Image (cartoon, rainbow, N blue to C red; front, side, top):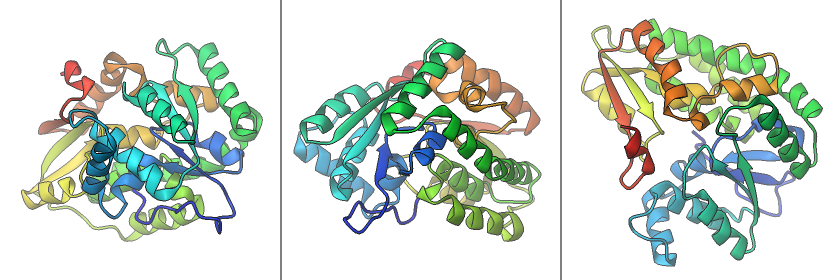
Length: 296
C-alpha cells in the first residue's frame, strides 16, 4: 500500500487522478496523470478510522460501507479534484458517492466493467475511458508493455511465498500497490526488487492460509496472523491487482481480472489455486453491511 500518498497541492506538477477501485492504470499513466488508488491512500493516511468517523459526521449513514466513507474523507483531505468511480464490478454504493462528490465540485468519472465479460463491450469501455482522460488505447498498450516486467516480478515473488521463501505479508502489500504502483512505477520497482532479493522468510512450520475477498479495512491483520504462526500463501484480490499471466493486450488483461465479474468467475481461478498452494484453511473477509455477504 501507499505509505505516503501524494497530496494534491499546487506544487504537484502532475495531476492526481483518484479512483475508488482498480481501473486500467495503463490508461491513467498514458494520459500523463498520477494514479492514486483511494483505498491505499485511506489505509496509508494518518487516521483511517478517523476518516470514517468524519464522513459520518458529514452525513453518511453509520451502517453504510466503511470504505466508501473513508474514501470520501480522503478525497476531501487530499483535495483531489477528479475521481473515477467503478460503478459496475465493485461496491454498490459507488454511484451515490459520485453524486455526493459532484455536488461538492469534484469531477466524477464513472467507469463500468461489463458484467457479461463481453470483449467488445470491454474494449468500448476502455476506449471511452481513454478518451475521457485525453489518450487512446494505443498509448495505453505501450504503457502496459512497459509494466510487464513489474507484473512478472510480482508473479516471481508470489511463487517464492508459495515455496515458503518469502513472507506473505510482503507480497500482500506489494500486490495491493499494483493497483496504482504507488503513483510512481520507478520507486515501486526498487521496492519490489529489494523484497525479491532481501525479503524475510516465514517460519517453516507456519499454517498455510488463503485470504479471500477484499483487502481488510485495517492495517495489522497479517502481522497478527503471523503472531499466531500462520502465513497467507494465497491472497486472492491482491494477486488479481498484480494481473498474473501473459495476456496478449489490454483487453485480454482486463478480461482475465476476476474481481469485477462475479463470484462464479472468481471461483474458477480460486479453487485450483487453493489446491496448488496446499492451503490448510481459508479466511473470507467481508465487512459489516457489505452486499458481498450474500456471496457466502
